[in-house]
Every structure is written in structure tokens, then in C-alpha cells.
Image 1: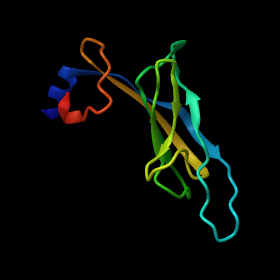
Image 2: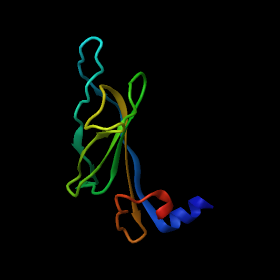
Image 3: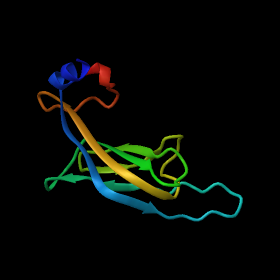
Length: 119
């Protein structure tokens, strides 16, 4: 029932796996020190146009340490990833990338601070 109500109020434009493979990140750290965050940025294009107000998630896979990160695309489709535990970038490793965008029925993007229960 929650799903029915949710789908009436909001249209999920894209809940897609942008990169079906794994995105390898490399980095170095001195022995005994925690790896530093690697800056991550990019641009999301959907059907030849920049995708505005989409969420970009990097989910760690395999033996990748850390909790991943998220970012939100700007009007030109660009984004920067923020580590879940604070800071810009991600720990080196392999990640699955998920891009999603939800809009209201009239096509208006959800406010940045909207929670699923708000829509």
C-alpha cells in the first residue's frame, strides 16, 4: 500500500545502474596509515542531456573498505562525491555506481532535503 501511494505522488524517472561494471579506484598510503580519500567527480548524461538533481551513489563491493559516498548532480550534470563519514571523495577500492532521480508527478524535482515519507 505504501508503494501505491508513493507511486501516485512521485514518478521515479531513473533508478538505474549507470555503470554495470565495477569502478576501480586506486590510491596509495604509507604502511600503517589509513588510506586517504580520493576525490571523485563526474558528469551524468541521460539521453544526450545533462541529468539535473539526480543522486549518484558509490557503493563499495568486494574487499573495499569504508561506507561509500553520495553526490547530487547540478544543472549541468556534474557531481562531486562526499564520503558517508565526512570529507570529499572515497577510499581506494572497487565500487558499484547507482544513479537515481525522483520527481513529482508534474516533473518538478524533489527538494534536496525531501525524505521518502514527504512525497
